[in-house]
Amino acid sequence: MTKRSPSTHAQGARDPAARGGKRAGGWLLGLFALPFAAVGVGMLLLSVLPTLYDWARMQWWQPVPATVVAARLETSRSSKSSSYTVKATYRYQVAGREYQGERVAISGGGDNVGDFQEALGARLEQALRDGAPVQVWVSSSDPADAVIDRSLRPGLLALKMVFVVVFGGVGVGLLVHVLRPARAAQDRAGSGAQSLAAGMPGRVERTPGGVAMYFPAGRWWGLKLALALVGAVFLTVGALVPWEQESSGDVAPWLFRLLFGGVGGVVLLASFYAIANSLRVQLDHTGLRTERRLLGLMLRWHQVPPHDIVRLCVTESYSMEINNRREVYFRIEALLHSGRRITVAQDLRGRKEADRMLASIGSATGYNVR
Image 1 (cartoon, rainbow, N blue to C red):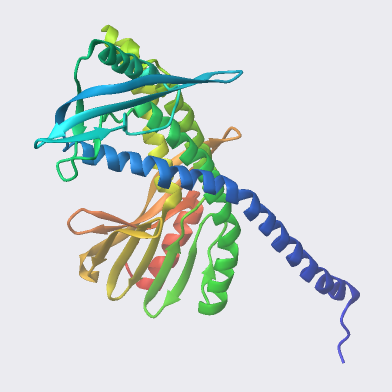
Image 2: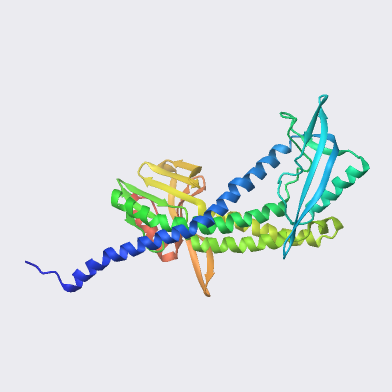
């Protein structure tokens, strides 16, 4: 009979406790992440997307003269700032029938972003005093649906997107970080998938004559979230330029907004895509199939027969400076006879790991990697 060593017995006793501690820590981290995710997702679903939807459909509404019945600018003051809300009632006629509206702008709440609320309130109050008509925009399908100002207000939208990306990014990123290890463990146990090395954020499984790979959303989420924060800062700086300065004829505010706000917006969108997209790949003797999804929804897919694949190769994707050390990330692409390139593996940290991955795929599938 072989005796179990005390160290082995102690290690076995400690393992369940360690696993239990990790599970408890994961649950606590998930509970911490939920409010952040709720704020970001709620802002996106309840404010940003409805605003964009209303703005898009209002572009087809028709202008109609209206009479202002009541108008006032409400001020809400706090110790640090004041916010403004325009309230108005107006009457207008469509096809000989009279309607009454109260919607002033796309967003109905108050804010202090720029001087939009103050300028609109002053204009409506002046129209009320003078008895002058104002132009309103009316839906052709439902004349009872009208608005005075249908402008999108990019500054306010950018401010909301900061909440979506920062709070939602932190919350969703942490939830992905908590849930992904458990899901990956279940996948490995059920399908026999092999874990990739530390430089490869996903999993690979050998199939008859090839490989199946999956790169989930949330790859290197901490790195990409940090990039999103940089973009949010730039976008906020650009949005803080007073809008009234742009009407003064000075080109400097436009350039400043384009430089900071434009770059920040592009970085935010790119970071969101980098965090939220996933890639599933099947490569074998029947050819190549890839599925790219965004937030679980199919974004695009490719189906390539084997005779169209010339070779597989490693390409540098991007690099980051972390603690004065340059980290380079690579992807593996399938080069087609048409000259087109299709990504089959991505976010591979370090050339050594990327080359090793390329050699493994080539060996499993038989495709040329030189």
